[in-house]
Each structure stands twice: as C-alpha cells, then as structure tokens.
Length: 250
Image (cartoon, rainbow, N blue to C red; front, top):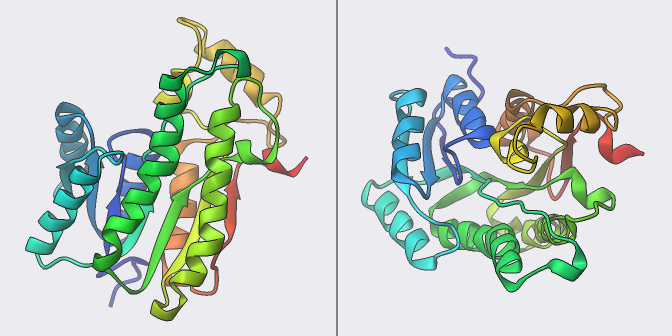
C-alpha cells in the first residue's frame, strides 16, 4: 500500500524546465506520478529531465504553435498514454506601460498566456481521462493594479475566466478545472524583471507588500499544485487557489 497522493497518475506540465514548473514536476514525481514536461529550448529541457530523474520525460514544444502541440499529442497517443493531470504552466511576463506597449509585447504576453494556454488544454482534450484535473497558471496580479504589467495582468484575468467556463463545458466528463495563482515568487522569471544587478533590491521591495513577510518559493506553489492534482481536491472546481502570502487579500 502506498500513501503517495498521485500514485498511478500521469501528468503533463507545460513550461516545466525551470522555476515553478520544475518544482511542480519534482513534487508530482515524489507523490508517485509519471511526469511529462515541455520546453521550447532543447538544452534546458535536457537539463531539467536529467535533474528530475527517471520519473520525467521531456518533449520540445512551443505552446503558442498549434503544430507543436498537435505533435506532442500524437507522441503521447503513440505511447498509449492518457493524462490524469494537466498543468498549463507555460507563460511569459514583460513590462511595458500603456503608451509603450508594442505589437511584439502584446504578441508575447497574450500569445503565450492566453493563446498558448488555450492550445495546451484544447489539444490535450482527447488524452484527458474522465475525472482528471486541469490546473491553469494564474497570478495574484489579477486582483490589483500593477503599473507596467497591464497586459500580463489582463492575460491572467482571462485565465481565471476560462476556468469558470471550461468546468461547465467539461462537467459531463468529470474533469475539474482550477486556477493556481502564485504571488511574487523567487523564480528566474521574476529575476528577469529586475535591472541588471538589482534583483535583491527588487525582492526587498516586493516583500514589503506581502502580508506574510516573505516572497514565495517554487516549492510553496508546488505543494498547492499537488493538492489540486490529487483526489483530496475532488470537490474543488472552477476555483482560484491563491498561494501568495496574502497579497491578493488587501
């Protein structure tokens, strides 16, 4: 008998090569799941798979390209593999005030966080087993204004809306759809938003706005993902699960 909460389950994590994605993959493996991760860059993907060990398999795929996601679906089908857990985690962030939002900026943020997320879930629908769990990557930014991050915040608000509609569309199959919304978390993505050499200063400033008094870690978020992926959350559906140290609550 095993006490592992995801024993016998198969999970697909998009954007699983670093930060929150790889932390979730590690926790899923520790809880007994077989894990597939995607990434755009072959070298980073290979490094992540090596770090995760034999419980993980990597596939090169860009979530914004339907051809990539269809190829991934076909590769998993060829393995006769169904999916019990889909964590649509791949995302992008970039800063630009209203007057400086370029077409390239909008394509990056909206293309990855909205189009890429839709393609990830839509393409994998045939592989999702009845009763599976779909977890969408949200953000605490949807709950408050963030100068320079309006496109990013809007894209994550769209993610929250998708969950409400998709849970109804998928109810006949018993598929749950929830949003996992981290607050400011120490990841390479967050670090990339700081000017060169200013990451620690940025972290101190961000911590001042967190009621719990510290930034999150990828492991903090991963523990929440395990709950949403497991049968412990079987009556949680269409919800937003905030793991943000209280940021969205004031």
